[in-house]
Length: 102
Image (cartoon, rainbow, N blue to C red; front, side, top):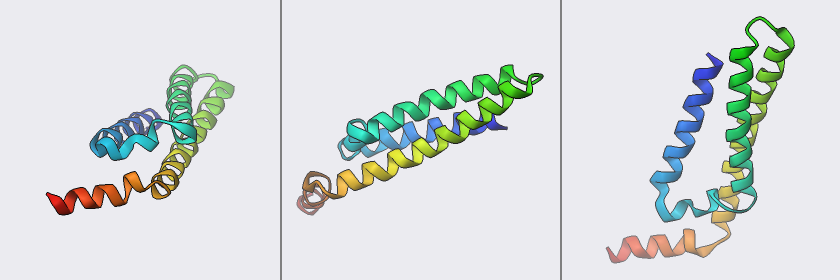
């Protein structure tokens, strides 16, 4: 179940970033980008540890902790990207002006 959750979370985050287009730039750079990359790495590491640790409890616990940390990092990444985009007029005012002219 955890493996499916990790795959779904990574896929949903990537789909969201692609769908945003230019407005998704804050997700790729700065603190948000770093936490996003850490989340992907921890999720993959944790899922692998869970699969390999089916009979080894310490490895399974470490994998579960990594999956939990990955989830936190992904959410923090989204929060920081929202803060960055709200403070930059390119992602708020310019997009609205573009929609009005279209």
